[in-house]
Amino acid sequence: MLFRNLHASTSLELVRYADIDQFRESERYASAESIPLRTGNFAVLRASVTLPSCSLSLVRTFPRIIRGYDFSGRLIIVVPMDDVSSTRMNGREIDRSLIILKGAANCTVYEPEGRLVAILSIRRDALADSWLTFEDGHALLRLPDAELARLQMHLRGVLETAAAQPQAIEANGTPETIEAALFSSFDEAMCAGYIDRRDGRARYKTIVDHIERAIHANHTTDIYCDTLAEEIGISTRTMNSAVHAVCGTSPLRYSQLKRLWAVRRQLRNGVPGLTVKASACAHGFWHMGDFSKLYRNTIGELPSQTLANARRLLT
Image 1 (cartoon, rainbow, N blue to C red):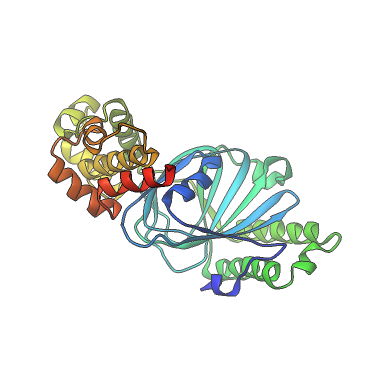
Image 2 (image 1 turned 90 degrees about the vertical axis):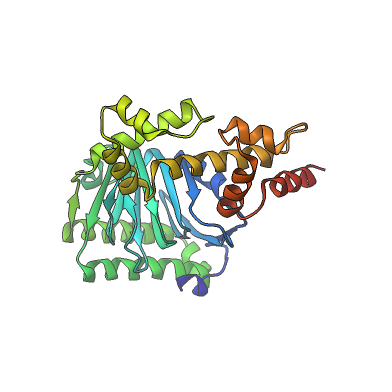
């Protein structure tokens, strides 16, 4: 794994996120939020190099659903650095394409497997004309295998040099040279591949957005597919197909995931007087036995443990 060759230096920042809460703090700049899909050890790493008008990061992710993305003033390019190809964006299979995000993207990304990605974040005022023409939103850049391998090698080289030879990165004029070479490498990639803006699952994404609004407006109850499908003007089957395509699960399970993690967020605050039952009921979980089992299977601990740990930290 690439991270084995990286260690913190004066040119490379290396961050290990202890838990989902710490990781979510790092997502705020992008107006995004991750919903973990599995319990277990949380092992997320980020290595970052800062250059004059961009930053290059390497991130090891975890199984999750991600919502949001607003990169006002920046262009983001996500490069796959491993062989994982199961990720979907707005219901579309990404395979091993590069993801390009600019401005407000409104994406729902389904990552059933953790993966390794490099992320180049470029200030808008540093963009070449070829990148400035991109409209706000998202697109996929599909590359030939050889071109993707070349780009991956270039990115690995920058990161490994920053770790092993920070003085070389910091030498006068070197950051600008490295940045220019990175930009040129991505320009070559764009010429070698093709931009795929097809959005055949756009209707499915619209349905999921409607469900999101319904959950937000009435988080005290489960989603009743028949009622909600009728409200949207679609069949229950279409609703299930949409949520499975975009989020990898059923409407009911997606609603449960969002509300369970909302309960956890509330319990983690450890507010005096707050009880597990009050928090569960406020989020539509009325049967405490079923709720505790769901919570433990999803979060990895009992809700009472979450609350007790939060209060222990406060004291």
